[in-house]
Length: 327
Image (cartoon, rainbow, N blue to C red; front, side):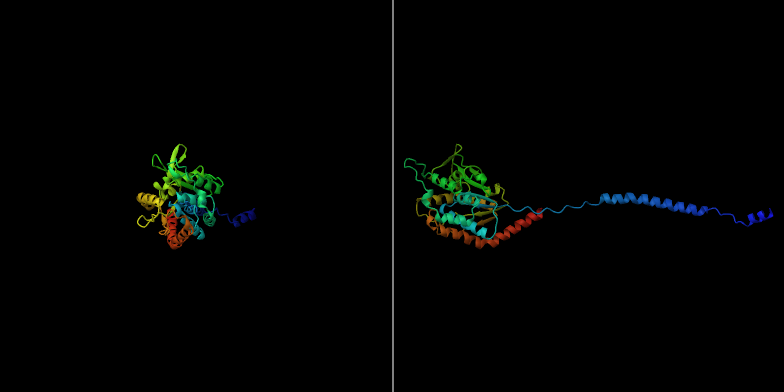
């Protein structure tokens, strides 16, 4: 018994866990939890306020370049040279619009023919193949114009305007109302014939109950119509004669001179407002009835482009830069 008592006295009692340490650990745990609770909403708030990632910028929309080919009878061969020169420099034309002689070349070009192909066709074309004299008693014009219509339709294999490789617009004048008409559908040959029907030279052309004559009366260089068709940048080719130096060797030249004088104000307004760049081949030595110098006219078109192309490139670069900035 005495030994057991001595043993109990020798055992050291176990110390309970310190209440001070327990309270301290509890306090630290609570503080940590509180800080974590406070930090979590802040993190969520920052995440919700962060700007969403911006999608990559879309590439700028490419310019749609329109070519507006003006009227001028035989001087229209210069349009071929312009097209050849632009193609040689890799400039892609997206929209074609033509008046009178410009509608003939424009239709051929819009069909998918290259400038070289049109050049070859022009040099082998027989003037008689597009001339059909009206009967003496038909006093509304010396030429019917059916031969020109057939020539265009045959060359293009009767392809309608809306089936062209490039969008095509042909401008004519309503004889009754005096208003311009833009043909974008239907028979290409008859539309071109209407656009080329110089009053008193060609008979008016009847289409769907309306009679039409030369488009040069209302739009000598159809820059506004190229714009209407969706062109962002319009290259206009003006082959009209300067009234002060134009050759008037016969009655046809006199008539064309009259149209040129009448159309000066209209042409100036249209080019200043709607054309971004104007090409004027030097055709001072050629009259509108001079079909014998077609090769010289084609060359004049090529020379005009070679002289102005650097300026055209700068204009195009400025416009493209403006489009990219706006985008």
